Length: 247
Image (tube, rainbow, N blue to C red; front, side):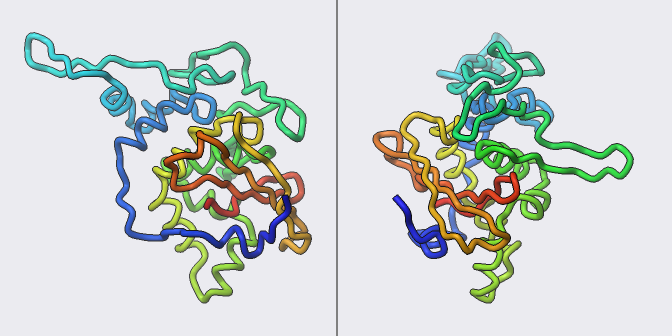
């Protein structure tokens, strides 16, 4: 089903401010999205203890009265390519997901490349899922500006400019404010376009700035119940997938 992306990606009930960020949800999702995130990164992000706190069952204490945390396997840890502490949780080096555009996937650890000589960092985004990985990680590791500079579509930027707003401030504020709800959406579509219950369609229009094409990933059925966002809008231009919006 084709829709007018110029209007539809921006339409709907989008809250830019005022949503309280629940750290508990963030910790659970970051540590659980095995197929989307590298679980070993929790330690580097200072989230390993939080991961155990949030995923543990009823409180248990030792003889000294200290809380005992029992690690549980992430609910998406069975996805191919998931790791924890650098060790694979499943066989294979990537996700192994065929996707709608063919080719093998790139392991999450290789999606951020750094030039040793110049220190320049480049975000690799050749599949829809890569946008999800970068959004989840870059907004959590302090590289949100890098995400904006390289992976936010020109369509999105120009929309805010036309509204007389600062696109960088508006986009990053929206993503940070709604991070928890976006992670809930990603948790239910860890394989992006090949996830069960996800419809993937070209959303047009043909006059996307830079000559790109927009696509919509829409979560359907029972998996969409209870979520603030059920759609992820992306743009593909010159082999790179970029973020447009969620709604």
